[in-house]
Image (cartoon, rainbow, N blue to C red; front, side, top):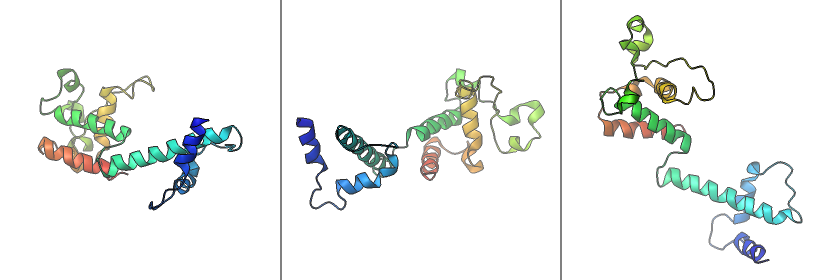
Length: 172
């Protein structure tokens, strides 16, 4: 019973706000599960679900606009690209540097267009579930999908880190 009173207090519209809580819930309607019955016992579950939707939307907006944090998939890409960037500079761990061979370093691939574009060779993998996620495959794959000017390793690490984060934020 206390939870129902607490939910009723939190769902009332507060004066002085630009958009009421109910309007935010209605705006998040595409996120609701299909066939959701909001009468009877499910009314409390609906309110909990609506609160979670609104809070999660506000949190991701705050993370992007005020704290400048990347979402989890972009953060993983950022970390992988930074590891690949450190490999030619001998700043990455040795076990990772062994997997970062440039296409121009492979004898029979030196005349390819990818050798000029400073791409990293991606080894073949057998397992589609685990093989793609291994650093030897995922790192070079993401590196090769970057724009050509983003693959320049002559830039200092600080400026490269800033330009990479700007590039990933521009994809939103």
